[in-house]
Image (cartoon, rainbow, N blue to C red):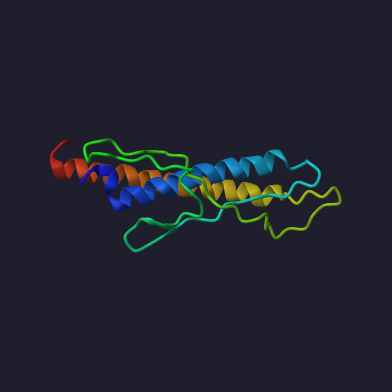
Length: 138
């Protein structure tokens, strides 16, 4: 079994990719805080099944999946994964200019996203360390 096939590492990679994409969306919201008629967006968090694989990632993995013709081939990492948005449901009132971005809320979301990403990367690093220790490479 390849290290990329482990469910926990796959789930952590998906979670980190989601946090990276969410950071991009939140930064776009903040940069458009003064744009008339701009509605803030956010991403729907991926759901995982009991095995740790992404049951519903909320998107597709691109239009065509890359195939592995041999088990010794390296798997795809960091593919063109996309995630569903929340449809612009921010819960805040729209200003007279039509902009619904609340900077305080967006900054809280950015901070929470950063902390969650740090936790996921820490878990990923520690999981790899445990695997290295188990196979005697440390």
